[in-house]
Length: 454
Ligand SMILES: *Cc1c(COP(=O)(O)O)cnc(C)c1O
Image (cartoon, rainbow, N blue to C red; front, side, top):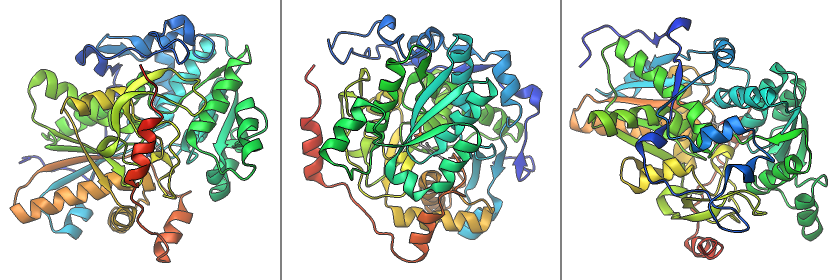
């Protein structure tokens, strides 16, 4: 039990901003190498130079435990970090739980989510390497927004392939990206061969994250001055996000706390890894007993029902083959509203930690998720992103368990972003039209059949 009075918001000063990111790879030896999608041999750094700067590739493959954050990046971080750690007193009261609930709020920047934590260093390293333009995909729109914001800080151009269904559902997201200077195209587009191939077969295709990735990678690979940037999944992205957990540890220390349970939603795994990996470091090296939970939608159950296998990161087989939990790279997301959680795979670091039993995973249904989102919005006064609300659901479930057992556990979750641009989803929930979607078992089998033979 904490002896100190805990304020609603626990701040760190600018000076206390972490100086390094934490690299879980140092503590998870024997990670399988990425494989070249054509030869299926381990990729060499050179294979990926066409679309990534060497500095980021070195981070991708590094086994160094702490990697220094460049001062230029820390300077830009300072305009929105350290991010507050909040004690959810009002939610605790509403639930009448003895649990102590904390959340790390990452929505307080122009992208509205944690994604800016990686967009800034990615733009920085590409700019340093002389790259003029970054191409990327966006599903829900948060990553495209973050990269649009970050590229203009360095005077770079930004091209965003936005999954068509999201572009239609979220016109304001497209406008924000354009306001920050990005060129946004609905994917499938006719700008790339991957897009044209799909459009020929099905002109009404509504797009998927896997296809938008193919379009952005193709764009980068076919233009000398252009690189590709990914908003999740890859090691260097999760590395940049560890600033979330590193700050949270310092903030909890200030009030003599350490979480019993750490929770985050998991799409590609970057906000989850970002919050959880520094705590996992304590668990692996310092014997902490923290329960660490990744939460995903029942409609896209990558960790809870997927297979740990080698798979491509995209539809067109441009990306390296990675060992991860996957539903198969042709995965077609059922209609769910957590756009950022619709990816077929998960970070290989998150996947490996899960396979090794270091973390747990839960899947939750979207009506339960929105119920939790609204409880949270009404008590804590922040409208959460539908993705983040998956973490809220599980945090509430754990707090309600404490109510039954009388245990006073300390629960920390990641509020990865706000939902101010996700009101279509809220509208559907409030009007009673949102239904629960379970990913059908027959599709699981079909997905496994598409896995490459290694
Ligand atoms: C993109 C996004 C996610 C999911 O991506 P991860 O890489 O799994 O973190 C979760 N929450 C928000 C707010 C997002 O924008």
